[in-house]
Image 1: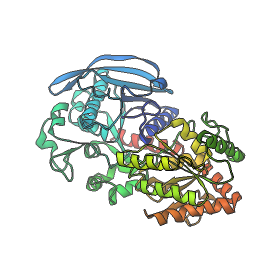
Image 2: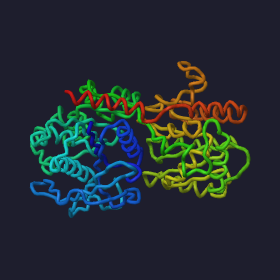
Image 3: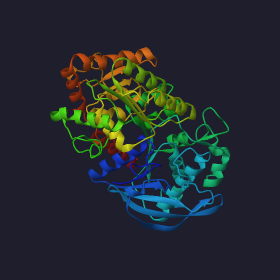
Length: 491
């Protein structure tokens, strides 16, 4: 099968969150299974060029229709850790992808509408005809719309689209201008509830709704989150659209790349280890403490890695820090805030804890340091308000770091409480789960993890090994996606 992935991220060259890891990991798994995979990405000025091998011109002077005129683009080609990637570089007066950041611009909807248009033009003009186009999140939500409404009449009538939603909260909204820019036109046609009209704002078009409506298959990143989005509040207004399209909607749990996230081969950690050499994890704890200038006495180390925002349960992250310290543990945080107020709050806490030998807050993101934290920590807190899949707990398992999570989204599908998950035998349980979003709920789970560490070190190590035994590779998700692709190819 010939598959083209179109996305706004691909780790490690373009990574703002878990989307980049998923695009890379799934592409690699599909290739390992014998399929041909290519990726189309924006050429940002701030991406990690040191992770691209052999970058060269692939298609010059790509003419992309835009507002009745055209924008010239160059398409460059290179290999990102073995994956063949095409990078679209528009020569536009707005400098759409030359802004020193991936997201966060007022005109993001137009930036990614153009990228979607350019990606389809590249496929059409270069005569690439993939069996399946797999696109991701709101940034590419217009691709199935334009494919069905425009490009199928220009030699692309046989291409099928799988559309994966990683985060329902960010949906992409625009007005009539995007229709005239992309050549879709016909505002009354698209401003209808059956097509792109936002379910709650009749004056806005919704990119994600368009992707759901027009794609041949729609997925999100865990089975439980699919249920939450369809039947609960986590569809953020798209529940009815999902209901109308439920025949083509399902959850497929993300995997992680065990070539990248594996303490047996990780080049960023101090000492390699496996379930049989779990004692070597202590060398990484020592190395982490030395790097962050923490004390070296015998006590558990609790960590948080992730964005500091409302989705990640930032109020519970703050409480976890003080609860861990009050229980005699150490606490390490690695993450960047998504708002000035949250950043200011944690900057204050960082200054307050500056001389504490048991606490370190690293505000920002450091990929290499994250590996050492996973390897050196004993417990990882993931207190999310919502979590479509979550990669933190999956990585934690592999590194023998016990997760303490809130029971939402993909966390429900992957973390099974050692004390209370009666649906699984004790040897298949792997962490601690709480369900409410208050401080007391977090304490009940975190305290149980700390109590086990303090009172039964052998039992804690057994729990670590049970997590390390879990298989959350791309093997099973890869197989599920191939079945989805096969299903839509033959319709």
